[in-house]
Image (cartoon, rainbow, N blue to C red; front, side, top):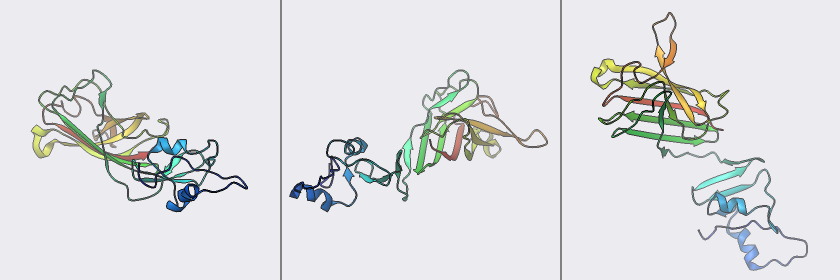
Length: 220
């Protein structure tokens, strides 16, 4: 815990004597500084503490984040966000796939309610592709799945086909608040439609094949 970190945000009564320690809390920082969100939440509303209300600011040492309280939740103050790593979960609607010695790399950045993410999944020699439609987990829960879709694009890459093995795909419907369905552009009809990206569609996935996807969505 740093030199400016607080464990409470006190409030004073009329006629109360203010000590040097009391005054130092206010003098050392304009925005209350806390070790983490647990310390922040414990600092408001208790005996002799300030009531948490809309407009309150706080700084968290654990994440180097400045936040404000909107009356219901703590929100991030707009800043230059930093890309964070996450490990997506790869699932399917049938038999579960297994990554084996393949790799899956996920990155995301969040600013307010806007989340941008990207994932690269590459199959290894011991990967098993499962059966059915493919899904990937999201780094941050999305807004209610009944109204959420994800804007984005990507490729399913058949490594054995060289330059001809790139197929346009996109993240589409949020199947749950934590998972997105992967969809394949289908140009066989008069107008382009979307089909499910699956273990055998648009090709049968095998060693060195990959899925590269990125998208944006509204967080819960």
